[in-house]
Image (cartoon, rainbow, N blue to C red):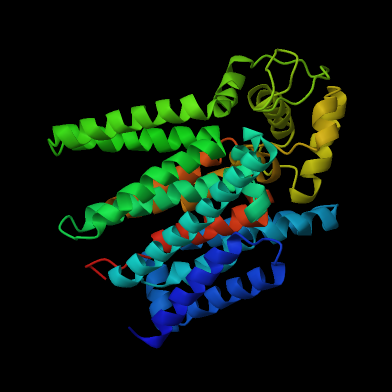
Length: 417
């Protein structure tokens, strides 16, 4: 393996490790710079131009960032605008670096394997420490959601859950890649553990994405591959696993019970629900709070539908609507829009959303489909669905995860290259 490939692999591994150590910002920054530099060194400038002509969606990605930058420049609140720009910078430097290289099959496999192993180790540390605290304090609440992920990684459960899903998809892809490999069965207990970790992290949207993907995969094996026993075993195993986890770790189900309380009154001043407390209709929860916030965001979008209110003003304008509706809970907790697509609509208008959808979702998805890259399609769709209930671009981690994985996945070197 060439030295530049080894350096790129090292950069990918370090970048992934320091995603789980957000408090070490300087190291995180250096690892990101190292990754960008090693990616740019993988090929010549001439080849980059050739790739740019082939992957026209990279131009769309860059155009979307230009729209973001213009929105920052025309914002009245420059301080706020540049803070939002910082978390969106990965949407510039990853397309310009990883997006303009061709990553061969072996290098891609080693990079993805390393990423999945690092994620699994982080998940294992979270679960182990969660069990330790649950035993020490005689309280199983330490095994769930943010209480499971934040003490070890400093990350909210939604981000760790997203990465756990990605690790499951990667290990499944590796398991299927070499049916005769003697060590492939080691992956089975690892995948089972990651399913359990995903359940305990209790991110509803990502759990549903994972279970839906598993069900589709099982049905594919039953209908298309005619592997009836394998498909049925997978479905039965998933159902049994969910039943056992629910039986012994029931508090995660409270996250789904919230969905039965979707009505809201902007002026209600109830407590914010928690998986470790009894639920009732007076509380704000993940379901009714999002309905209320999205209604406010849609109202703000309709005020400036074409080009949006600009990045610097979006929070101030949203708070104005919260105050207008006497939405005290959202003001007190400084709630963002909790929807990446609605956030783009509000800040950049319908033009910004169309450019984003075409360049970052639709065209990369078509490219992966043409290459029959099912792993890439699954991960891209996971991101696309995850952004329905969370605003990833307002946090540096969200922007880095999205920018890195999407550009990495579409940089796969095919036999035609």
